[in-house]
Length: 453
Image (tube, rainbow, N blue to C red):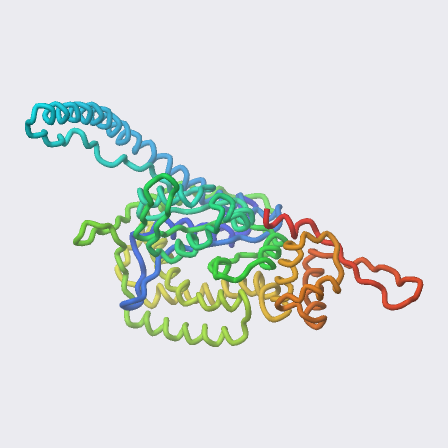
């Protein structure tokens, strides 16, 4: 991982985040960790890597996504033979169907018993093409992919801001419910105009992408905290030092590890439906989980807003990571496949969460997503977009009497937050001829309006 990061001129943290999301998506619905009866988690991980344009976000993701695409390409080439064979059967099926219909017509006309439909008229379902990762797809298209690939897939994008900001573009409504369910692996149905609905037993999709700090601030300002952003692991390390690579990283190693994860198959239940293999926790792992949940309860006391939502999801995240890390270890080829989650597995996952991911979330979310002032800031940003303001005054805001913005005690901190985020800029207007306090006029950064386009 470190050699891959150095070769890409990026922090190793970025490569780590990409590995977690890619490996989690490949495990997908084949294995779910289950601490006890009634609690099971899909192992998908949503990672957002944060940094300036020169931070190396895309090269770091490519260190994992390029091998993934190589593996997918090989799978698709193999699937082409099966697809070609099916298409041949489909052509024969058309002829058999046509001949059968003619025979039925003739039988009805002569008063004879219509013949049964021949088996050759049914070519079977079209073989799906493997899609280990997608970069831009509508909910309807993703539903079709998931219906043909029940283990799940990965949404990978260079920039997540546009995807998060434009979930309503295609459907005219909101795609957020689809994505909220895809994190939890729940059943979902997608209705399609003029076509049959698509039913998915376990909607499970990992997410990986990058975002710039200013775009993250804009998203936090507009977020209603429905839990979507809180599902992401924010990774925002210091920039990597400028350094020439002193060794090549082993690309074959990660190729082989990804292929090994693809060997995992979904078992079939008594009714013939594919389902996950639920991996139970050992007793000492459950004890560690109970202790971790107590720590989370304490962390919640000092958290607010989006950070509070993130902290509340940490037990489930640690459960997911315990299996992902265990299966990544198995994918190296040096260990047996784990059939239980041990204290060793969960201990590593909880340590990663407590000592790394939580501090990263505090850096990314706490400054802009908690407390009364931050809620007022988000409300003000929403009001500016709604009114289409290019310039406005504090008095204009007060006149609207919106929630969180009903008096100057709330408006002034909100203005300060937007100023700090470079979303508005104060323009001092001199006093009029009759004197009085100078007028506070604010100009609006066009970025405020662009985030909804």
